[in-house]
Image 1 (spheres, rainbow, N blue to C red):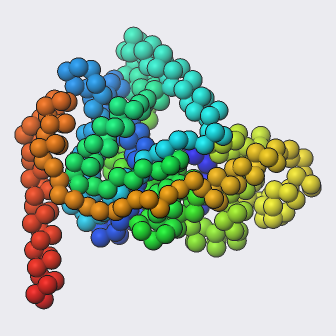
Image 2 (cartoon, rainbow, N blue to C red):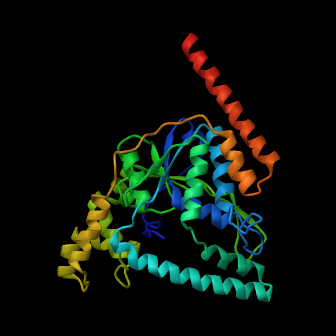
Length: 342
C-alpha cells in the first residue's frame, strides 16, 4: 500500500521519450502485482496454463519489458529480500484482506456480478515463491539485469537511483521518496487506459514523474521531516495517528518542525522506540552495493522453453516478440558502428 502522500507531492506528466536512454530501477514486486491485477479475464480469473498455473505475471513482464526496450528505456528489476520485522503486522493484515477478498470473489461469481468479481479478484492476488522465481528466470533470459535486495526492493531501487546508477526508481508507492529516490516514475507498468469503475468508459493513465528535490523545496521541509510526515500518516511499519491525514501531518510539521515538538504541544501519542526504528528504515535502509547492471544477449531458447513449452504461450506470438528483440539488437550494432566511424 505504501505511505499516502499523493495530496502533498507535485508531479509532472511525462512520456516515454523522457525515459529513452535512461536506466530505471523497477520495484519488481510492485510491477508483478500490477501485471497480475491487470492481465485477467472479465470475471477476474488470471491467465493460466493447462496445469492451472497463473501466467499473468509472465505475460506482463515479457511483452511490457520488450516495449520498454523498444522505447529506448533500460529497465533494471529489483527484487525484495527479507522484509523488516516491523512489517510483520502489515503482511499479516494483507493476508487477511486477501483471504476475505477471495471469498467475496467466489460470491460475486455465484451471483454473476462480473464487475465486483474482477475487483475482488484483484484484491485476492497472491505472489508466491514460484511467481518470483519464474519472473527472475524470464527477466534474466531476456538479458535484463536482476538485482536482489537484502530487504525492501523499493529501498534498493531508490538507493541505486540515489547513487546515480539509475536515473530514477519506478513504483506505484510514494515510499520511494521516503527512501531518498531523487526521481520516482509512477504508472510505468500500467496500461495507458483504465476502465472507470461502474462505467463502460475509459480514462487515460499518464506516466508521472515526481522529483524529490522539487517536493522538498515546494513543501519547505527536509528529507527527515518528510519521513516524520509519513510516520504520522502511517506507513507499512505503523498505523499512523488516528485523525491525521497528509495535509494535517504537513501542517503540524511546518508548525512544530519535529515529531518531538508535536508530542509536547499537541495531544499526540507516539511510541518513540517504534518511531526511531521507522526513521532508521527509511533514512538508513538495508541495501547493498553488491550488484551489477549489465545487459546481455537474450536467450531465445530459454524464453521459448519457459513461455511456450512449460506455460502454453502462443509460439507464434512469442517468436514475433523475439524478432522485435533481434531488430533492436541490429539497430544497436548499427548505432555503435555509426558512432565508431562517425
